[in-house]
Length: 322
Image (cartoon, rainbow, N blue to C red):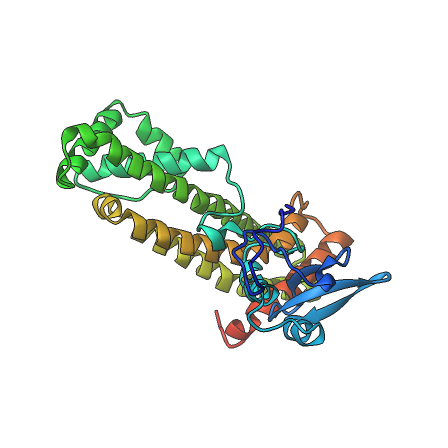
């Protein structure tokens, strides 16, 4: 994602940029990149040193290379750490994540996610006009409701009633449709993240099956049991965020009336979830196509998964009892 260098200022200082168009020659070193430190506590500039990399914290980078306070490079370094919430690696010249520029997401969703989000909104419309508004996430249940011959008529009636309640002329019904379409676009990202949550749940379920497989092995059985306990924290945290998003979007009339606020809130939760799931990406890949059996590969995976969970969630679970 190389940039064109941005607009040059008339006389020093920061300039408006959509890319990390640094000026100092240290950022021109081939192979240099920014990422979070291994403990995720701060951003680091990694510089190739032969067959390895040197890790330079940003304060050290500023002082060692005399990057002046208030300069353009100083300004860009100031947004590096925030940017690393959305991408794992940033190389000089790449684009600033759109989350920080205009609020849109830097990652893509599938057509299935878009369709599910659109259908969710339609079902919500149908239930609202019926007087029993509900939020439904299950794709099979949504499809079944949409197949009901009466659903389409209720949706059309809902658009008419919404237009009226908003004090708009009947011919402006398309504007209400457009507003809900705009929200469905944002909701698609939540549905994509719900897929990632399902992948995390799948790991938890596989650990249950592996515990049965290793039930006669006291060491691995105990380790898997600890993993099961540690899984409770991230699972409950993820579910709580999804529940909050669903609750906030659970009233169609309020949603349409306060669309900008609703989109801002949905995006904030999207970003929070995405940032958390980024941490799980490598582990999720390791669990794809795992066969539930006793094997050296599975034992290595159990140990690495336990380390992953313990490093992040052990403190909140150490005193927890069944």
